[in-house]
Structure formats: structure tokens, C-alpha cells
Image 1 (cartoon, one colour):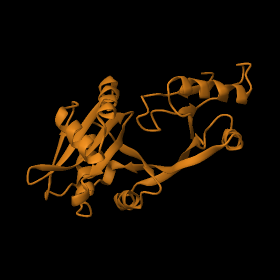
Image 2 (cartoon, rainbow, N blue to C red):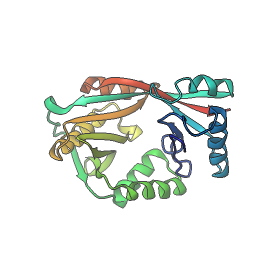
Image 3 (spheres, helix red, strand yellow):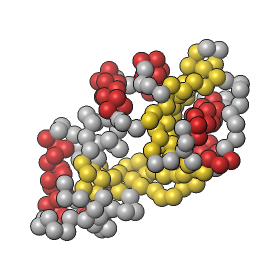
Image 4 (cartoon, rainbow, N blue to C red):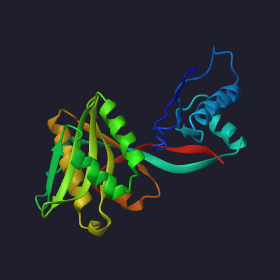
Length: 228
């Protein structure tokens, strides 16, 4: 919409249900406030709360201030980080990590259980992942044959993006997430990826510490503006 991408996926995550103001509105004949109202109407018609993703690259540059004046609050400040895979250490063999390149019900079942997904959100996730044309790797970490952690890697332009990394609460602080990530990153290297990126909510200190340990470096931060 005049340089803004409006994403919607039945309310599954803010990332997939938010305005991404990638380019300016010059030439559209609209004021920024008119553009905001159009975006708000789009999400209201979809039964969703209007959400804007704010990065250092938004257009117009003062959009964050404009939204604040309209009563939008800051939600989930996050960090985007990257890692050169050149010196990636080999994963340990204490646990078994399996990566499958097709979406399967076992992975969906584990992820839904670990994140307490509703049946509706699980269906939405299945549709989102099934519609992607990018190469995907669905990782499960097994302890004594039982899945205790899972994650998703997506290959694009020489990068492997990491998503949906989660460990069962009873098995946290045992190094499982680290081994899952190393296994998934090793799979990415085998697919030709030379770098990795991820996004982590700043409040998630445990995950941030793990990514620091693996060598991920922040390149920018972003947050969401949600109308109160």
C-alpha cells in the first residue's frame, strides 16, 4: 500500500500481522495520517489490532513519533543478529539432532505442545509454512528418543534464518538449545549458507546469552507500535 507492506495471518505473531513501512509515500497523494488510517481500517476489517513494525529504516523516518502521538505503545523491543558460519563449532553428540526438509506432523506436534498452540494457530502455522517456496529445515533434538527441543531454519540468499527455537521447560539449562542450534546451523552450511540471522526479544535474557555465546552480533533493533 503505497510503499508499506501490510501482512496478516489470522493474528499468528506480530511479525506476520503488522505494517512494514519499507518505502515512503511520495507520489501517492496521501498524507501520512491518511495512510495510517487506511492501514488501521485494513486490520480492523480483518478483526485484528493495528500493529506497526518500527525499524531504523522506516519511511517516513518520523513515523514512530507520529504513532506515539496517536496513542500507540511500544511492545517487544527486539534485536536482529547475524553470525558468520566460517568458524562454526561442530555440534556435540550428547543428544541427537534430526533435520527434515519437509514440514511434518511430528515437528508440528512437538512445537504445538512446547508452545501451547491452539488448534486454530496450529492450522495457521501449517498454512504459513506450507506456502513458503524457500528451503526449510525442521529440527528436533531427542533425549532418550523423546523430542525435547525444536527449531526451524530457512535458507535465503546465502543465509540461514533461525525461527521457533524452543526447549521443553523441564529440560532447559542443560545445553539442549545450543546443540539444537549447532545442528541446525551445520545443516544450513551443508545447504550452502555462509551466514545466519535471527531475531530475539530483548526481554528474553536466556536466549540472548546463548546467542552471545555462539557469536551472534547485533546489527539493529526494532520494536512494534500497538494501538492501546
